Image (cartoon, rainbow, N blue to C red; front, side, top):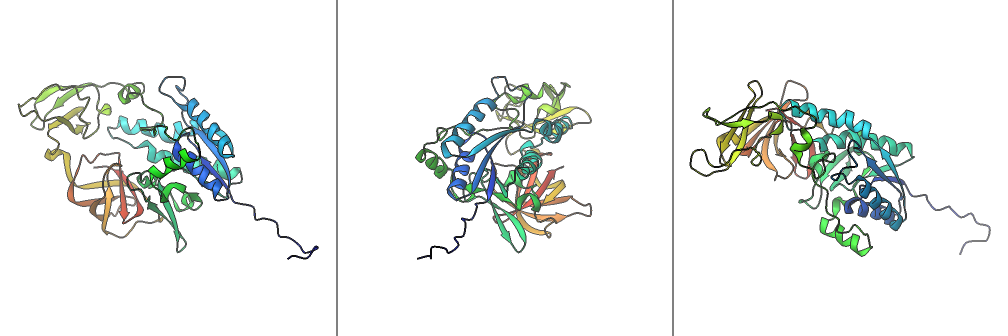
Length: 370
């Protein structure tokens, strides 16, 4: 029993965490979890695109209403911040440059590095945050003075591929509340605590495109430059509308009806010859032109701050892909590297990310150049 005049230590103020909230179930449950863990939580809704947010494909207004509803229900403050100018300059402009050059970029990777963990991080710190959080399915581990990015426990939802360009400084004060639980449990929690968006459909695709047809969107910003469609043996089988509108491995929307040689196999985009404005297509998913045992990558970003040693690892050359055993070969050119695979990789696409792993640890990666 304490004496009447003995000093009483004030309760320790919980750390302030600013969490990015999108209106979806993942960030909503992540915010609730942080609040339950005793953090002072502030929700932040990022508006990254406003060129056509009055159109049917843009869900920003409904997403904001969902964020406000969730914040009210779980008892946290929330604010909206407009990063549209930063997004257009740092992400969208690069997206268009890459497509115009015939490559297929991944804007979600750039958005994480430049907006969600840079512009958002800076804004959160200006609010006095001790840490930021998101609803990404990944984990961080602090070990020997370094921060490691780990795959999520739910392998089917792991998003470390999209986060591989984050730096030590960006990861130092990041929380990923969902990294240790499966997606099914996230929805169960949402229903249990009565979140109205518990069954809200996951957003897919690129944030500024939404659910609209991709080619329709791209056609607003890039000119059509028609040219021939050829087979590997040089036979002209059609005409394309512009190389920027196609990606390696693409099967639908090529504009070729029926079989050209009688075997009935589907057509796939196999190569793009930018110099001659020629699109090459091949029949059959396993055509040799669609398979590669090696790739070259540029503009590497390593989470540890320096390149890992050459040797045996695993890698992904696209998001929805199982890890594939590979050998990392370093280069005399800074930020360049190559990967040699034990099994041929399908439709290795310039502009996409090659992301390297050591078990569950995401080491970083680079942009596929060839």
